Image 1 (cartoon, rainbow, N blue to C red):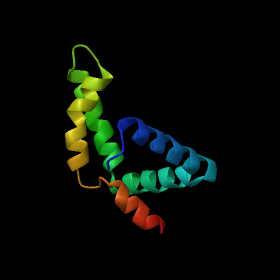
Image 2 (image 1 turned 60 degrees about the horizontal axis):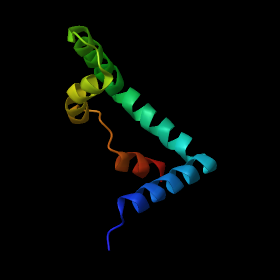
Image 3 (image 1 turned 30 degrees about the vertical axis):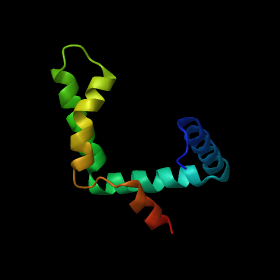
Length: 89
C-alpha cells in the first residue's frame, strides 16, 4: 500500500534528520557542489538567472525559478542525485 502524504513527509523529515545528525548531509552537499562547479553548471545557471531577472519587470523568485528550472535541469553538467550517491560509495 502506498504511503500517505503525511507518512511520506514524516519519513522525509526523519531521513533528513538522520543525515544531518550523522554529517552525511554536509558530505552529500559538498560532493554535489563540487560536481556542479567542476562542470561550470553553477556559473551558467547563475548567469542565466541574472539575465532573466534583468528582463523581469516585477521580480519574483518563484517566477524566476520557474523560468530557469527546465533549462538548468537540461544543461550539460546537471548532476542528478543518484550520480552523487554513486560517487560517494
